[in-house]
Amino acid sequence: MTDLTRMEAELSARVAAAADLAALEAIRVEALGKTGSISELLKTLGKLTPEERREQGPKINGLRDAVQAAIAARKDALETAALDAKLAAERVDLSLPPPPERRGRVHPTMQVLDEMIAVFADMGFSLAEGPDIEDDFHNFTALNFPPKHPAREMHDTFWLPEDERGERKVLRTHTSPVQIRTMQRLNEKLPSWIANGQEPPIRVIVPGRTYRSDSDATHTPMFHQLEGLVIDRDIHMGHLKWTLDQFIARYFETPMVESRFRPHHFPFTEPSAEMDVKCDRSGGDVKIGQGNDWMEIVGCGMVHPNVLRNCGLDPDQWQGFAFGFGVDRLGMLKYGMPDLRDMFAGDTRWLDHYGFSAFQAPNPATGLS
Image 1: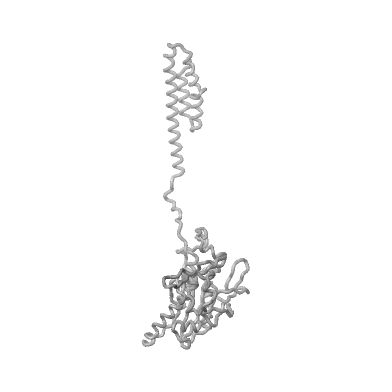
Image 2 (image 1 turned 135 degrees about the vertical axis):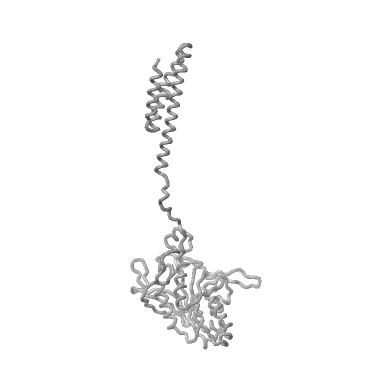
């Protein structure tokens, strides 16, 4: 019979010296596997006499149990050491700064609106607002749109169902209805102002959402406009040109703007014009204030006498000018965004790229972030 005491001592020594779990598993298989040394000893018990089996059985089983206990203890020690090493290698260093938190971004449209409002505010304009759902009078009739004007048709305008009085409201097609409401308020207050020796002029800008049934790379069913209105005595086109030149220079952060006015037609202004500015289209970007190309930037004109009359103002006493910018389009031009529809797609990846931080340094042109 094999010297079981020496065998136990050798196996225990090898188990204690096992450097890792793989080496320990090799010893287990060698001793306790199907063909292991201890397993082979257990197989011999069946060939022994009853007296020999009673004597050798407890010894061999004791050897097996001792080796199994030694392997289990060593395995536990090796696993504990491996876990301690992993924890030491992967522990959090509390002295390091935390990862940056993701912050929200200011949408380019809101950024552009803030910049435009800041520039006009420095020029003495105040803010005016009005409802998105308008009636026919404020959206069309008061602005000198004839009854059969194409803009009244369904392909340009979102009409609402008839109300209980049979009238159909409309999602405003421009922010110009606010001009009508502003002039009407001026007409209401004129008597008291004149009585007190005050005749303050109207100098307002009207930012807001507008709606038209149109959609392509440069048009969306909902978009943003910013209109301006000045009503005073002795107002002329020179005042309009100076105002727009000053705005374009500051908004595009360029010291020089060369502009031209082309005759156009708008029902609510007479004369009407489209203002073009010099630009450079080379290199894939549009650079305002340089180059030899021209780009239409804004529609404008002198307020039509019929519009003044519709608001109760005497066109022989009061004159004014109006203009209207596409806010989203100005953002595309200044910040290089190729497709207007992306501004309304709700893609946070696009906003991460084109959006603005609310905490960035002020814009030197406008004083805004």
